[in-house]
Image (tube, one colour):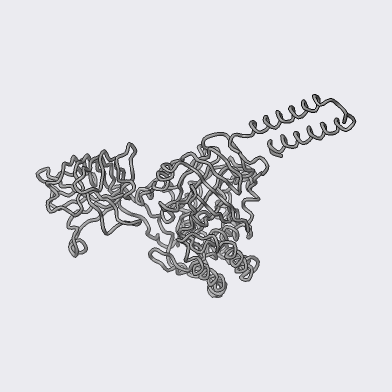
Length: 603
């Protein structure tokens, strides 16, 4: 029983005792009755002011089980200062910085606000943006709400925060909802998920996926102990000596348990008995087969992405858990190479690829997949669930979610056809995997640039950028300090009318000829228009560095080298009014995408 419920019950007992006392004393003097009323009123005042500061609806208790009931649509209303909302929603990531050799610290910061959850108000919570790349939005951002960020409070039994995904990639609104449910019902460990109606400062943002956060309460509930070593994988894999991209989720977590597995996987002959000491192999095979069956192209086994690993203290074995399940129930990837050649066995990751080469694991995998099809892949029930979901959600969509009916029909089609796709490959078992595991993709640093600049806003690219401002540039590339011919560097600020994702963007362009070979060097970075203003804080910028011609056919066939450029800007002056001064500092990295190559098939 919660503290509030106990106090309420105590007050009820007090009133009952007072009423019993009054029965034989109906003729008692009015002074005594007035005293009783006064005491009762004082008790109510004490009860009210003694409630936990953050919780405003004492007559209703929220629990995780209630909030994650599958058919329940949670009503979430967020209130915060409008300037804080603008700051929050405009925060972003740089693609190349986010995929460095090691994980980048989150660029998203908490702001204070209040949240109403199904009518219960919790005050002084922390609210921040969330998301990696595909789900980023400055109009309908995914959100994390942390109850105890600003004060100690535990208002909801079983969870300490809300995770609200904007469904920018989950257009059917079903991938996360049905995907996590399938993992759970088939015996894997996964978070719960349903839907939420989200409103911020009175503006309705539509249907979000309400996903259980994989934090200490979750680990305690599923493993009975939340003190184990805990990892998140974002384009990360178990390659020997190359584990730096794993995010360590607790202070006590080290890479040692992962390195033990990676060392075994690197051997010419895989020792299953030794691996079993560090990994629950049957549990992993079920996780693996489930990702394949669901068509989750962006998970661990196909894309080395969107997963957690937990070392269970009870047996010191590693367990995989899915995350970011917003791109399941599809037969193709939205990125090259687009086609998933073998659909029944996702095998681009190191662990899946190495395990599949063992005949015993091939047999276990096939049996596991067949069991999933026979006992858990019930097309009629899955489609009935989609029909029920559609009825619940169709009247609460945001205007940006108008494609929901069509995307939901595509999910229905996938469910109806998936069994035949699986059985076709099972009939010619074992399927042939022609490639070894893929090395994870990441960006490596080629150089750095620090810039102090002063120019003015141009509506169009100026004819002579060399007479358009001043630039102090310190630039290194491939281990060499770059100098410019005659120390002459041009600069201009204008609108990139080709635009980046999200529309046209203010862009700072620097150009000069390299002293060593006279080749033109162009450094160009842009940012959202909403972030183009003087500010004490740095803002993310991203763009490109080109050595050689940047124009037309010469840029394609003329040997030009184009690399990613990303970093931070701090503006002292910034305006898009013609002729307005634009000045500040830039801290940039030149980055090149690497990895993504398949290793030879193990012998």
